[in-house]
Length: 264
Image 1: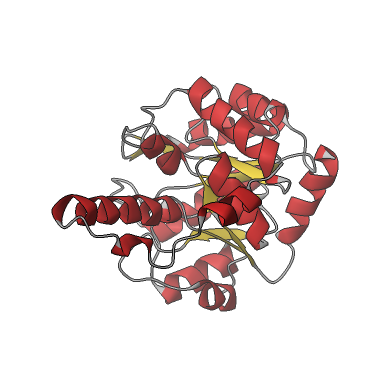
Image 2: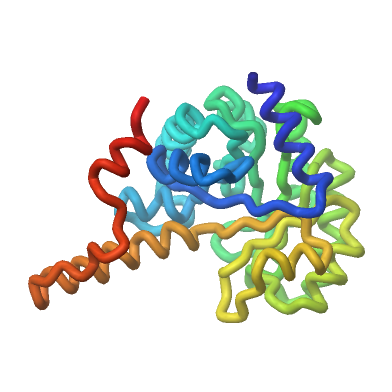
């Protein structure tokens, strides 16, 4: 079954484009799968917030991995894991993600706001690829030239890194932080692999249909769904504390509805 899901997930990247929502726990993953998404990714930000801490490596790898395992157990669709920058050992991170049921994963080339040396970043991709052969795990190489403290030309750096990462075994290239249509179109044309862009990360929101028209193959949303859920909780809590009213229940799923969705 795992091999079938890996092939199914890889095939999505060859189509006209697909939306990959990001779940942060078993409940959110199961709901997203029931809606009809063909695959799901995890979000390190959403997982961290669900533990009440900041994103950015505060959650240890074992804790993150256990959440990935919980998600793959209930999702019943291909799951791609957010592996951040590899937790100091990209090969081990990928190997453990595979053991947890993931058939894909993101690997970042930056930490603490700074890009890794391109040689080190390429070696990390190669180590990740060696841990899971092509066709068994969709390796999504994330490059943060647009999303880090980088003083050079982010477009040229992104394309150069993308080429190196593809040569090292990446199946897809993930470029967060890009939010103008012309740059996205140029990146899609220059990068020799399917392009993944995160939607909703900035004030300039470009929707998925438009991104597909620009050549993007994979659209994820990072922590956006988790942000929306956390915002709903905060707003509901404020209403309950300040006025005692229950307007926050307007449009909410009923108890019986959720019980039905989570029935085993």
